[in-house]
Length: 163
Image 1 (tube, rainbow, N blue to C red):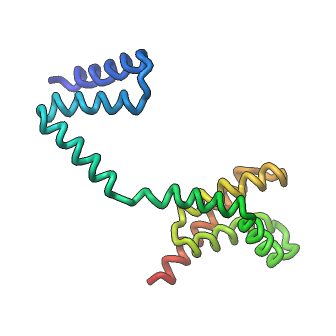
Image 2: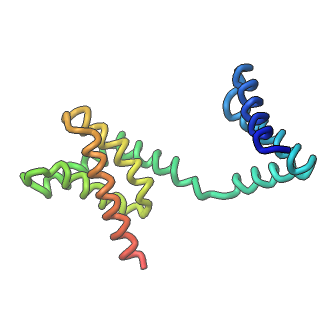
Image 3: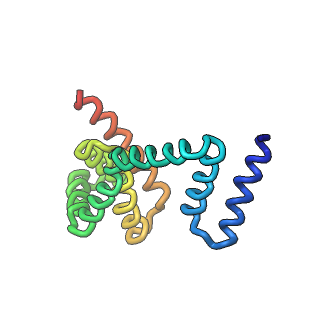
């Protein structure tokens, strides 16, 4: 079968399923099952799907992501994040540009303590950057850049001392 015909069948099938108001996830699942049944060969394609589903359920590589989001919400609602932010802010004193230094310091501290730089970036970015942008009136994009710098430092420090 020609590649353009396969592409036309996939996109045509998806378009028909979308017009029938099937949810996107189920439309892609349905087209994947049909494609595997046709191109891999009957039951062997469906066995591949069942094995891949089992493998993805038993792999816990993505499990920390919702747990770090939960950690961020607990830190936000308990006030621990703001106490940590105030402690670092008091430690910095009246330095010019201390909000940027605060973002870098918070990012570094949270990244070193948790050990997961990307998840900590999500926690601090959602919890504290919105607070700074909304309540203090600073640039949201500039503050997010400072948070990313902090987590880059935290990842370097954590890797240095974890060996």
